[in-house]
Image (cartoon, rainbow, N blue to C red; front, side, top):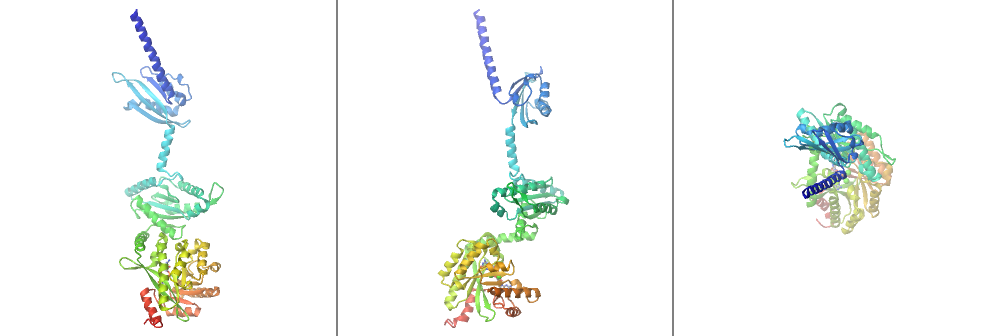
Length: 580
Ligand code: C2E
Ligand code: CA
Ligand code: CA
C-alpha cells in the first residue's frame, strides 16, 4: 500500500514538474517575438506556439498540418517556406531563409532544425519564424552607404572606382574604350556664399539627380566630392558619346534649378575628359588625367570641356615640378631683382626703373617670372616672394638715391593676393619710412585683374597709398576691361600700354589707330602714358609723334642686374658726386 502511495506521489510530483516545465517553455516561447512550429513527420501533424499573430492574420489554431499552413500563409511566402522546411532534401540538416512577405513588407527569417531517431530518420522538425525587418533595413542602409553617396544617390568614390576598373578590364579584353568625364560646378563657392550651404547642398543634390537620369548599363555616375562629379562611359558612341552627353547636360543647365524655398539658380560646369586606353590604362589614373584636364578647362575660362592630350599632361607635370622647386626657392631666397630703366620720350632722361624678379634655379639658370609668377599666385607663394620684392626694391632705390643724390621712380609689381593682405598698405608705408625714401619715388604697378574680385576693397587700398603720396600705375593696359567709366574711378597716375600694341603697331593700321586713341585718352584723363616693349627706333619715332610720355623697352635697355645698373648710374651721376 505504502509502495503504491509512494508510486502515486512520485507520479504526481513528476506530473507537477512536467506541468511546471511545460508552463516555463510555453512562457518562454510566448514571450519571445518568434513563432514556432513543431512538426510530427510520421503523423503529418503540427503543433504551434509563440507569436503567430505577429506574422499572419489567420488563426493559427485552425492549422493542423503542413498543407494547411502552406495554404494559410499565402502564395508569396509559401514557396520559400516549403523549400526551407524541406531543406534536408538538398542534404541540409539545418536551414534558414529570409523571405519577404509582400503585404506589410515584412522580412521573415525561417530556420529549421530536424530531430532524428536511432536509425537517423527524421521524426520531427522545429521551425522558427523570426521578424528580421529592422535588421534587414539596417544592413540595407549600411550596404547603401558603402556604395552610394547619401546626398545625390549616385555612386560614391570607392564604388565608382571599382565599377570603372571593371569597365577598363572589360575594355582591355574586348579592345574597347572607356571615357571618363569629370565635372566641376563653376564658382560653386559663390552659390554657397550667397545662398548658404543648405541651398548649396540642394543644388548639388538636384544636379546629381539629373546625372542619375543619364546612367545606364554602360554609363555610371558618381559624386566624388563637394561640387565634383564623374561619369564613366563604356564604349562611348552614338547617344552615349562624350559630345552627346555633354551637349545634353549643357541643355539641362540652360534651365534653372528650382529650389525648395522658391528661389532658383542656374549653374555652369567645367569638364575634363580622359579616355582608356589613350590617356591611361587603369581606373585611378584615368580619374587623375580627367582631373588634370579639368583644371585646364577651369584655366581656360570655365564653362568649357577639355580633352586629355599629352601636352596638357606635360604642362601639368612641369607646373608640379615648378611648384616644388618654387617652394625651395622661397625657402632659400633664390631670387634676385633686375631693373629695367624707363625714359622720357622727349628729354630721353631717366624717368624711373621697373623692378622685375628673376629666379636663379639651382643649376644657375634664370627662370622667367612669366612662367613662375602665375604658379606662385595660385599656390600663395607670391605672398613671401612679393613681400621680399617690395623690400628689396625700396632698399635698392634708397641706396642709389643716397649714393648718387638722385631721384627717380622705382616701380614695383604687386599681385592680387599680395594686395589682399591686411597689412599690405601699412607694410609699404613702414618700408618707405625704414629706408627713408620719398613716397612719390615709389610706384605700385597693378594689373586690371587685381580689381576684378573686389574692386572697392582694392581701390580703397590703392587710394590710401596714393593719399600718402605714392604713385599707382595700371599695367598691361589695353588687354583687359579698359572701359572709360571704370578707369575714371581708379586712383591712378600712370597707364602702361601693353607690349602687344608695339608688336604690330608699325604694320597694322588698326593697331595704329587704337594706340593713338589710347594715348590721347590717357592724356585727356590727365594720366601719364608709358609704352612697354619698345624695341626699335621706328616704334620710338612713332610714339614720339603720337605724344606718348615715357618708353620702356629693349631699344634703350633690357632689364639688368643691380651691378650693371650701378655701373650705369656711376657713369652718369658719379662724376658729379666725385665718385669717379
Ligand atoms: P610686366 O610687368 O608687363 O613686365 C614687362 C615684361 O616685358 C618684362 O618681362 C620685361 O623683361 C619685358 N620686356 C620689357 N621690354 C621689352 C622689350 O622691348 N621686348 C620684349 N620682348 N620684352 C620686354 P619679365 O621680366 O619676364 O616679366 C614678366 C612678367 O612677370 C611681368 O610683366 C610681370 O607681370 C611679372 N613680374 C615680374 N616681376 C614681378 C614681381 O616682382 N612681382 C609680380 N607680382 N609680378 C612680376
Ligand atoms: Ca609691370
Ligand atoms: Ca606690362
